Structure formats: C-alpha cells, structure tokens
Length: 439
Image (cartoon, rainbow, N blue to C red; front, side, top):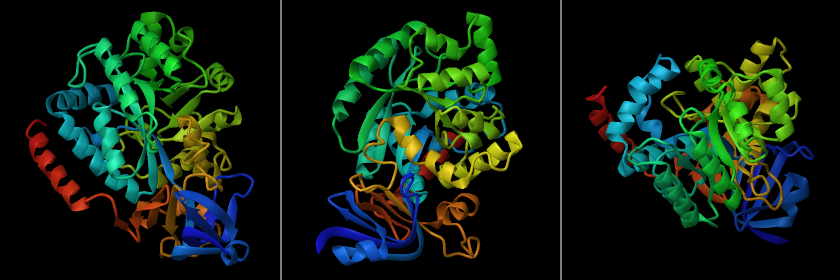
C-alpha cells in the first residue's frame, strides 16, 4: 500500500492528455504537491492510502484552467467604459483613469479581487500584463496561485516607469526577484507595436533572448491597428515584428483578429502561440481570431479573458463556450471547435504558450497537482451524457467546487481558503467610491 497526501474520487477526469483523455469513475492521488496516480477506481484506489480523501461522485476533474491573457488589477475598472469602441475606450476612459488612480495599492487590491474571482472560476494560473509586476507576483504568491508575470515595456511615462530605460531596468529587477519561485514565471511584455517603438522592441527582444524568456504582446487586435501600421510604416504589425526577429516560438500574441492566409502560414511556421480572447473581442467589436484555420495549420491557440474592464468577467468556462460557439458560427461548421478541443485550449495549450507544459496544464503523473473539480450535479447540467460537453456548453464558474494548486486547496467545497473575500470586496467598494467621482 502506497501513502499519499490526498485521494480524490470523481465521476470523471478529463485529463487534456491524448493518451488518456477521459477516465470514468476516476481516482487521482496527490503526494508532495504532485500527481502520483491517476486512473479508474479499481486500478488505483486499492493501492493508495491517503491522509485526506475527497468523494466527488458527481464531479468532473480537469486540469486547472489557465488564463493566458489578462490584466488582473483592472478588475477595479470593471464596467467603467462599456459599449465603446477600443480606441475610444482606451483613450477616453481607461488610460485617464489609470493615470489618476493606478498605484501599488490599486494593483494589490485589484489583483486580489481578480484572484478571488479566478479561483472561484477554476483558474489556477494566469498570464498577466500590468504595472507593478512585483506586486502582482507577491499577491498571487500570497493566494498560492500560479502566475506568469508580464514584464511591461512602454515608451511613455506611467506611475511604474518614466521611459523605456526604466521599464527595461524594472523588468530585469522583477525577473531576478522571482527567479526560481515555484509559483512564478516571467515574460517580457511590450504592450504592442503601436505603443512601443521598434528600437525599444529590439532591446526587449535582446533581453528576452539573453534571459531565455518568452515575449507577450497585443497584436493585430483591430483592423484599424493594421491599417494604421500599413499607413505609417508600410508594413503590418506582424511584418514589423518579423523584421525585428521576434516572430518565433517565443512569441505569444494576444487577440490576432486580423489575419490573412499568409499570416496564418507564417505564424504556424514560426511555431508562435496565439491567445484567443473571444468575449473581449466581441464586446469591443474588434473581430475574431480565425481559430479553426489556426488550429488546422497546427498553431498552438490558448484562451484568455483579457481584463475585466473589457470582458467583463474572468470566467474561463464561459470563454471556452464562447470560443466553441464563435468558431462554429464564423466557419459555418458545427464541428469546427469541439468541446474537448476548447478544454485543451484552456489548459494544456495555455501551458504550452507560457512554456510550463512540462509541469502543469494536464492531469498526468509527475505534474503539479493543479486541479479543478466541477460539480455537474445541478438542474442546469443534468442529465450528463458527455461530461466535457456539459462543462463547455452548460456549466459556469458557479459550478466549480474545488481548486488545487500544487496539491494545496485554494477553494474547497466552494469556500476560498487563501483569500479573505469579504475584505477584497470591501476594498473594491472603497475604490469604486473614489473612481466614480472621476467618471
């Protein structure tokens, strides 16, 4: 008999591992934060004795969801610029409010609020791009969540840095501060080719290469972004990054709603990753990434919510559903993005995009026990014929019952274990009272 820390018995386990994609009547064993056994109950349970056992007969176990593109602290700006086009939303609402209110305390309180929401939604890892990256990282660590920190690079001054030199200096400092932390990875995060000069992009590329880091940026988000780049530079934003040697397997491009067949072929050949943000792009009328064509070309496509100010939530289950339905209606093909593939986009594909797929993103022996347990015993979910289809097409964040990161419960039987939710909500109300006076 083998000893382990936790044994979870669930109705099903969807592993995001093609060798064993769905296990019925599944048992998963955790020891020292990692998965040590997984399989049907008769094959696993007789061989393991656990300190803690969880019986979840009506639940589906999935890898912890990975939000591959977000701006967590913007949870405090949820709803302040609804029903506006992207540029007006940024220039008239978001950037002025950020200039007035963003501070270390804003980022800490906004990130804690976002983490409470994301953990409740089954998200175990998020890829962030925002100011005060050190504060974001520490807030995630305090909540025991996994985070990929975007080392933001811009050319214009903000409360975080005065110029490109300072952004790059702070990027290196934050990277060094959290290097080797089990819960934290880093990426360079130049905002976009329209907000960062080619000279600064080249410097960020050089530093990313030296530190062996990926690069996370907004790219081809709107038709106007592409047309403006053609007008000013005689090249698309993707062309410009290619000329700088940045279109490669280390590039993670968020949005990519405007793509030609040649763009898709180039992205596939370069082995770069694309993060699809369907709900944010629909709300801002930015367009939609050609996901079926990208997947058919072999591109790694992950999922992200974007920030709460443009989504307006951080529910990755909703994002899976939006991605699947949007792919079908745009392509005219109901088979364009099946439920299992949508789940892979929200788990293992996100892990690949962040470069952490050897450690998380699927339920496999040896990987960190980053696990989400979704209870499927509810009127809006019954009867369950296919648990993954039920998850993608009928479930929501409210159905998430348990969440583990490295075997530690962040949510247990729908109770947050590492965040004081009442305090997070109280601080959000305080920020609303301050921000509302400037709207």
